[in-house]
Image (cartoon, rainbow, N blue to C red; front, side, top):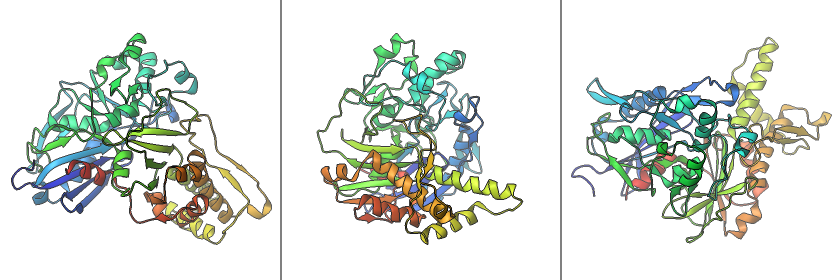
Length: 464
């Protein structure tokens, strides 16, 4: 039900490096306004390079700034808010003191209080040996490092005192919804719960018996509800958004990104940004097997209306290419030369566009894979004829596409009735070499320009 005079929907996405907000006209689906703000929230972790943590205060500050930049008269017309965010990660807080609300320049917004750092989906503190020591889940999804429950198990073993400081946990997007709605305890969508591990998507319940037997603090786990449900109403006029605006239970950024772009059941979506994901929607009534296979590259994520997405999710995407650029920048600096990352990037792309073929082979799994966490990157078939920047860049782009193809091959897509691929993501959009390799490796028609957008997807899900 729309409130009188309030007809717009706000979509928010809390990403790994930025937050984004869009204003959606629900009837037409048109995006009326869009705003993005970098969070710059990364922190050094006690776990060294393996730990990936972010400053929640900085994330919320960026979110408040992002919303504050939207037109005030538009925000006053909000009827609903949809929120998505980075999956798998976990943040802890105290239910009685999660935030405090302040007024500044005629706007009311909240600031975190008694909140831990966000341990993100990229976190690698849970080694293969540690994960093997955990109880098998009663779920079709395996547990990997960076998953909320795995991270909590790590704290239980290594820093139990830390867990005693808090009585609530959730994803960063769960935290935001809880604070906006003034909820003492969050609710979590099935999408986010599944991303934590130890969650059965058939029964939509946590593996409480298994976890309790291992001393896991199950009181931290929020109750799970279906995606698309209303979590509550805004308890204050947040950044100009009226008090009493309905707020949906937070969603997974991946599912929202697919929702924003795949218009046909015969579409597959390939998104390459920081990481890479190739996905398509499974038929109605499909149910995955309850027994996870850790070595299986393709998994099934809960989507909308009790349906699933078949997903090949690689940890290696734009982050690998960015590491390549940083390496070259460091080399040139050590040689006494200075040049910007953007200059290096453009020269690499131009060089690779002039090299249509290469015998050089690069396995780009620099960050491992969830189904093969110990995998590393490698280079082979090196010859004197393939040492140019053009050959190396072409081979790297080819390797990134072939890696995702090895996880979800063309033949499997054809068997599922897929007829085209929607190519999206910031890295794919600006890398013509990746686009060429995508079309060569998969041999499907590829549609570009219909970019996935989790914030738009979150708003679209809440507009009905």
